[in-house]
Amino acid sequence: MTFLSRKLRDLPEWIIADLSPQQDLLQSLIVKLGYDEKVHPVLKEARINLSHFGVRFAIEESEPIPDPETALEKLLEGLRRRQKRLLVTIDDIASNTDIRTFIRTYQLLQCKELPIYLLMTGLYENVRALQDDRHPPFLSQIPQISLGPLNIGAIADSYQQIFHLEQSKALIMARETRGYSFAFQVLGYLSWKYPEDESKVRRMYAQFLEEYVYEKIWSELSHVDRKIVSAIVETPAGNVKDIREKARMTTNQFSPYRKRLIRNGLVDGNTYGKLRFVLPLFENFVLESTEFSPIYD
Image (tube, rainbow, N blue to C red; front, side):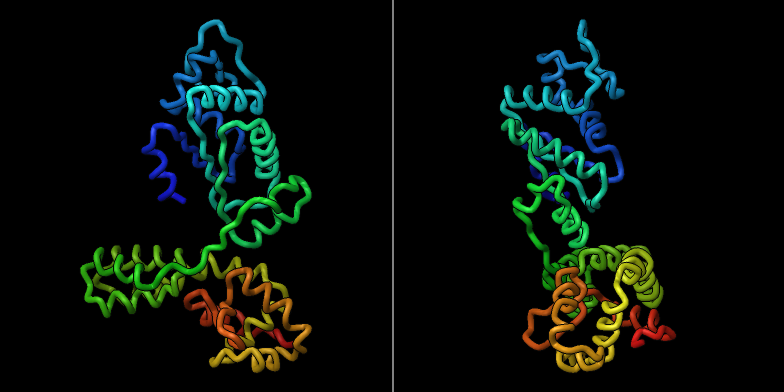
């Protein structure tokens, strides 16, 4: 998403606003637009006073607009007159009040054919939670793209160029990430920071994955999810039949949980009759988490 924003930002007809889901999205968007030099001609021409939102851009003889939806609508009308378009990006979305309020406003602006576009990314469960919410209902109709693992060859090429490695060494590093984007970034960062201490890189790599990702994933798994995940760890060949038997489940009991683990990006079910973890070192984390846990009760 950052790459797309950077490319569009260089085009004069596009205004880009990258928002954080932890903020008041409408207010944050108006402030970003108010301080964007591409938007200043619109503020002058339409005499839009955004001082209510803390934007100190002088507009003479114009009353401040106190309502964020009205302010945003006027800004977009001004952009449309100048044949400009606004792309709003929100990374790592969550199903919360701010997101839902912003999406409802976005839908109203779209109905008025104003030049605003929205690109959001997030974990499957967070996107699904927003879709399952009846307000706003239009989310179930908009296009979605499920992102798979990064290409191992492309990761190896990056490592090879950055660290001046032999191809075989770069490929080993790339395979250790399994194409997981966070792992790609973390392993690269640690290899750059500790170039002479490979054992420390490996140790901290596992620690980063556990503390920043896997502990949260594990905490959100149900009792049955954990039972199946542990059964996958105990089945190196990954045969679905063996996993199901270890979990002591019938086919009908097992199928919906299998599908959910695949949708959540924990396991890869692309090979018929097989299941394997998508996330690197996740097997080790599960073993440590379940060593003293009675998960088969």
